[in-house]
Length: 459
Image (cartoon, rainbow, N blue to C red; front, side, top):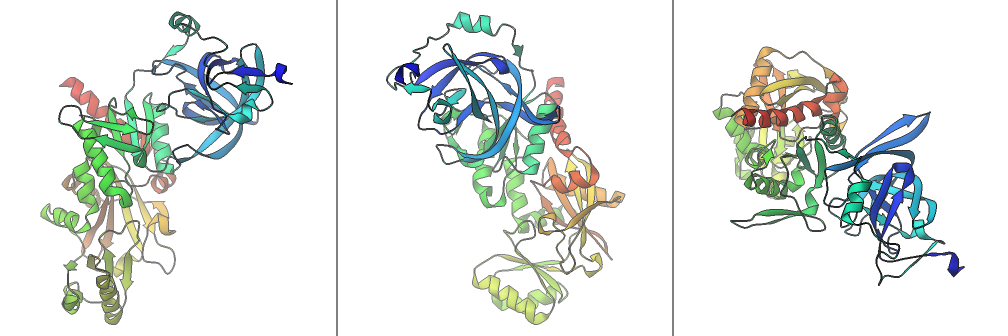
């Protein structure tokens, strides 16, 4: 039995005939269950009524200019946990592996391995029954020279000269993040998903840096699209600020995001710029509860946590007693709150205007579920197309400008006093508005980045 097995070192060169990959360096790791292949621009498609996946690969480490376009039958989608504990959903393919004189079919997951030392990881499932590993040896089956590699890849396509754009976010499977990645790739840009929790930074006057898991330095980006969850605003904005220090264009600046997340400060900014809002009160002592309620016209009224988002931490108090109870309950937790007049005539509806680079590119009406006053899509609200008035467009654009946001979701409510601004969101979701309007909002975000670089070129 031993004589029939291939003996491999801890690193070997192999090839994938069906993927037209003539040679690639692999890390041979019996500690890893699953094999993984470096892949970018991953997209599933249907071929002959079967599920397939297409993807691009830069087969040579530290060389993003050489690109091989691949496609393979799609076997599965699985959650894979990396050695650093990061969980990621990956596409799984089956293809022919050639190593030395031997060939056999293996399953591999597809993932971006830019931060890893090898474009290919050969795991134990692919080796089982066929391979013995001598961890003290390397390249027992030989390795190509630099000239060999050039010859083997002389016909490979050169990468496009698009921008290198990073999406700084937490969840690669979120609809909005996937759409932005897809839109950038479709427009010929090199897109990278950067998990906020996997980034860390070096503060230095002469050589500031941002590192990614595995020690990769992220200093070569043209642009960053921050998509920062409220729960990690502080760290996400610190990273965005570091990219700004590296002269990387950020679609929304760290300052704009920070001030948009401070509900009180953002409302003060908006008022100072002539944007009307519902009458709002703010206090820091339960002793002021009665006057606070009177200040906004009495019940019913809205009580909001300053740190709340997506409709969370927002309570409708229909009576004076209920209002006192809610306010005092929040105060007992030392929570900062806003008290706001309730616009009854809005009837559980608001308008979300999506502003990009000073223009309203799309608008929807959001309507709350029966018995609910919050119209957020995350809370079961429904979205429909609406024609916004010129005044509503003016308010949305003015609000985004006041907050210095290039991308903003501006929420407006129709009242008997005219349109009033509720909130400005610096990381607005795309699913509801793209689904309702069938507009390519993600593509508009990429265009805003392209416009920035074109204007710089003109200057």
